[in-house]
Amino acid sequence: MLKKIAITGPESTGKSILTDQLANFFQTIWVQEYARTYIDHLNRPYEQKDILQIAKNQVQQVDLFSKKADDLLFVDTELLVTKIWSEVKYGECDPWIIDQFEKQDYDLYLLCAVDLPWEPDPQREHPEMRHKLFKIYQENLEKYKLNYKIVKGSGSERLMNAVGFVNSCLD
Picture (spheres, rainbow, N blue to C red):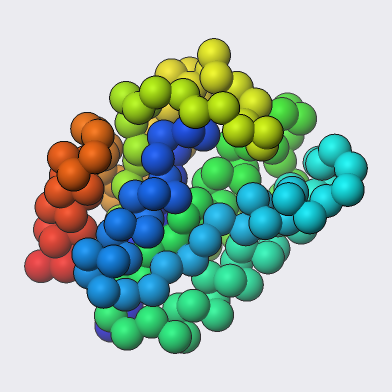
């Protein structure tokens, strides 16, 4: 049976790098963050309606890759990210995103700690809010009683912490 692992957390916490490293370590495929691709190809500033479109495409990508994966699938961001993004940016979230978030079926969420240096990127918006955002992520994971572990450290230490959590989930 397929195990799905979500890599989640505030921006600039190494989610994409960690997802790639985990997929390589476990020799499986992974789903890239759709928001980055979408915004890279947008010829205007994004709007609230774009977050819904991003969420829908992210769900489609996860569904597609779930059919291709054998035993394990890693997902770089999921609907918790779009939910919190929308709530922080616009003070609300589209009901479709909330409904789909509540239906997600991840076996484990790896919440990336805010212990890596901020790396500027045109798509990143809140360097001063990372600790506050981390708390929001953790509160949501607990509110919805989701299985999560906090991944800390840098480089190979961070990867091996995550590997340990994934192995525990596979047992």
